[in-house]
Image (cartoon, rainbow, N blue to C red; front, side, top):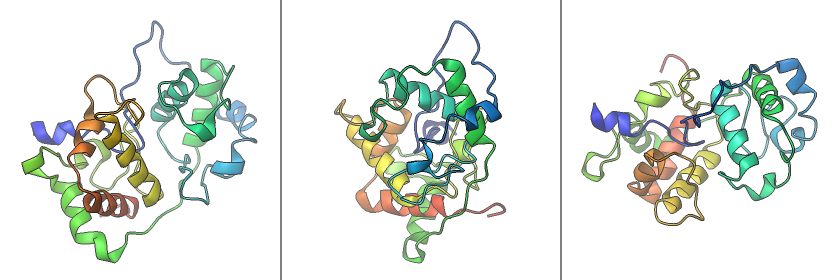
Amino acid sequence: MKKVLIFCGLLLGATQVATAASPAPQGDAEAGKAMTTVCSACHGADGNSAAPNFPKLAGQGERYLFKQLMDIRDGARPIPTMAGQLDGKTDQQLADIAAYYAAQTMTGSQTDPDLVALGEKVYRAGVADRRVAACTACHSPTGQGNAPAGYPRLAGQHPEYIAAQLRAYQQGYEDPEGRTNDGDTRIMRSNAFGLSDMEIEAVASYAAGLQPGQ
């Protein structure tokens, strides 16, 4: 059980919401929609991006999205293509944007048939000899994530994007130039560091293609 819990946070990012003096503001989806016009160029009008280098935001949990938006704005998660996009945005505005995208429906994705066996093994059992735990405890057996806890949805996401984030976390294990916004527990950095290149490709492909009921 301990090993399973270690892997709580796969991919799109660390999910521990930063401690704040006051609760996160309540998001207004309608207000958020009005602020996403510029976002649509990369993420699609409804948050379903066409290009795999830009993540799908539609259907992600509101808590997770709010955390990532804050981290990007505040510099905890540097993304070159997002530079300046959130400058000056208030917490309330970020909460509104998060609420809008959370209310949308994420489109599906597909698993590469050649990667199913390895991807399923890593996703559901981890890699015990390298202390890589299974993804299911935090991202759910069907990849839907855990919105109240702030764990992101993987099912339907671009597999290329999932793999890229795992590599970024892998780099961040030793190099601050990688992705490091998984909190002091280093959940994602530790687990990504234990994965081989093939395992990253396989688990990203498998998770992206998961469907409800699987």
